[in-house]
Image 1 (cartoon, helix red, strand yellow):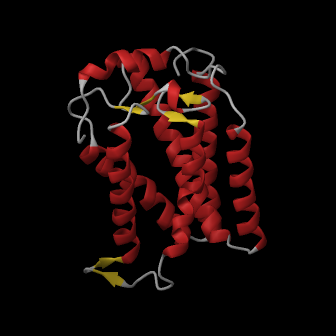
Image 2: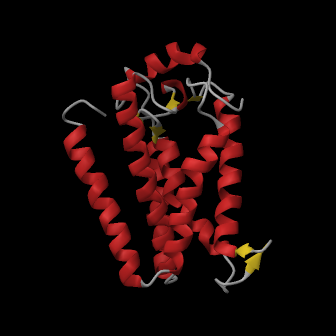
Length: 211
């Protein structure tokens, strides 16, 4: 499934009614949180601060995108991507379940695979860009599979694997891998700004019922 289909709108409508509902809550919520926390603690103990910064950069950008997706849903009627209530223990926003969120919380640790030489070329391009493109392609392919299941819903005919690859996953991994190489002060500034923006949007938009 490379692009969305309007026939899935009833499924998306059902999902909109159960955002942040606890009806499907189960203990996997706590288990996944514990695993992610342990992973961060382990990286911190090993002083892999660059990898932690890369992971937090991706996660903060991910949240910004999810907020925008929820805003799009509010004003247009449907999100670009929607998660189904049957596939998750908890829907945070219309397009992100707890399980997906925890995955994105650690996706930036793929930065540990980056070559030590940040100037090395791969296929004629900077290796950071090459790795970002490769990671984005892998995640886009996984999303094609997800969209072919009842767990993940695309309803717009113009939205699908190619737009996801270009507009979503490439920015995710570029933010992560470029942050990996940035100076600590720059890392803190970028992540701090993104976190403040995300929190401010959530504090404003959730009580208003927009997201």
